[in-house]
Image 1 (cartoon, rainbow, N blue to C red):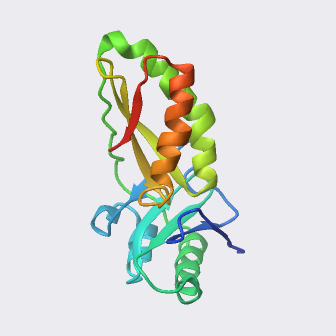
Image 2 (cartoon, helix red, strand yellow):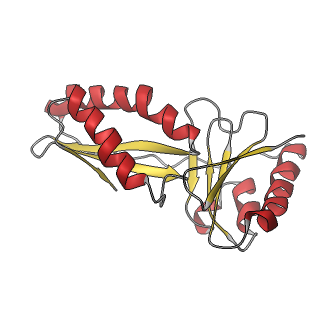
Length: 185
């Protein structure tokens, strides 16, 4: 098994590509802490490496975020854990997934569908290239604020605020006049 690595815009996160499907198209799993990794044997194994602070599974990649340390010292342990997991044929996830709760009023459902479509077709693919994901969390029709959750390498990335404000907010405001701002939750 050959596992490639790619850097991301977040210097604390490295993207691992095992050359096979991880979560599958459109599916993701984010583990911001070891406690939340209980339902994933691979995430649990990665969190046994002391410097690992976050694990994210995308369609065909695994993003690992470090607390500190040098990647040249961390990569062998991470590569070993990923390789061992896949060669043993262990399940990626066990148990039921957590449902993400969205908030918006029924009268805003048409606007929300537009927002979700734009996020799905224009934002998520670009964010996935950087080893992360973005999830729609809500829309407040009275203020025009869209709430989004950043995951994977995007959570805590130094350029995430700029991406949200200059990229996503400007695009949504252009295509959906009801949108006035975008915020991270």
